Length: 560
Image 1: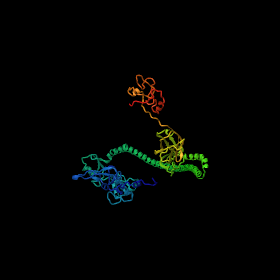
Image 2: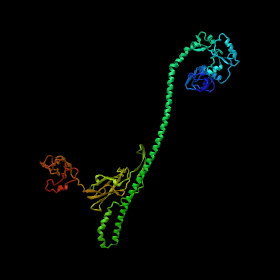
Image 3: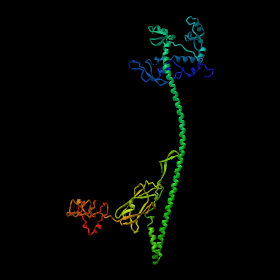
């Protein structure tokens, strides 16, 4: 404490003489079962959980909340009056009144100011009563001290008086009723009870309290204080940890913002690169179209001038080179009538804000500039139908549009042109059908009517795809078999003698067809019309008819 501080000053500073409910000095202080002290009037004003009254005037205990610790405590049936009085609180009020400079009347005569105090009788005495107190034989040995000295030592207290006999101090303890009593109470209400002086029994009862405190509650008090310190340290550590994490979060946010800004710059650069790439493609396409336009215009202008201005001899002399040039121009892939260049409004480039974009400097980012634009040089053609065909039969192949990275487009809508022209007969063209599958692939179908060799021109956006033009070989129409594919005529006809077969096999006994294990049998299943042993084959009937010397020149089968 500070230098010169008196012992009693801490009592006033702690405010132990003030009621926690009303904030004033205690007036008739009572002890609740939770050991918290309040004025009797303050306790009476507490709202009970259960009604103190009942039918027929019966008084029941009421339960209230302690204003200090919020514990549920039960009041006795008599209410606040039935609670124990807190005499220590009264001592605090008494000491505080003395320490604050108030006068104290004499407890014996009640007239003069008390300047002395008997520590044995706990009474305040004026100078006259103090001298009389020393002269009496019964009290001559009592220790009488100056009130000022007791103030300095903080040893002021007041006697505990009987509530039934005013002026009588509680100096005896009734063992039967377990309560302190005065002399008159012991002679009247407790006459048959075992009463002893308080100083004789205080050790035993004090020891029971001390035992609970020393062995039970004091260790627990230490553990609670330690636990409280741990919780407080945890709070401090939590606060420090939260502040540190807040700093990390802010640093992370700054770094992430920097990464997002860098990612944004990368996306913008990617968009600019795509713009330049597409611009170059358009420039190339424009140059190709301009060249094709100039070629066709030059050919048309020359031919029209030749026909308009030239003489017969001039026309005939220039006919060969003119026809070759015009024919070459007619077969050009750049035909605006079929391969109209579609308007590219840039919708092939889009921004996908939620698509995963990988990591930038260790941070995951989202947002991708999607640029799946068809690159004709990377498009591919799949299927046997682009190389081989059959007269009168539908042929098919598939065009797969791809981007510059070689990945298949996920959408359709591209300008696709497929032209099939006979190599020897330039006027012979095959009509084609292109079906957009909507996933970047296109199904192409055609039906040739003339066999021979064809050129297949596949263009996307007026540009040839990879491998175009392709060479298509169309074979003659497959001659269908007129018979049945059987093991022998004997089995297929059910043993009919007149059943014949196109194979050279014979059977004795008048059978005109073939049979297993007999002369000339192929030894495997074959067609009855021509004898071919290949089920998926062209009928060889015309070839068989040329073998006039064959005993089976008459090729017919029994209808089964």
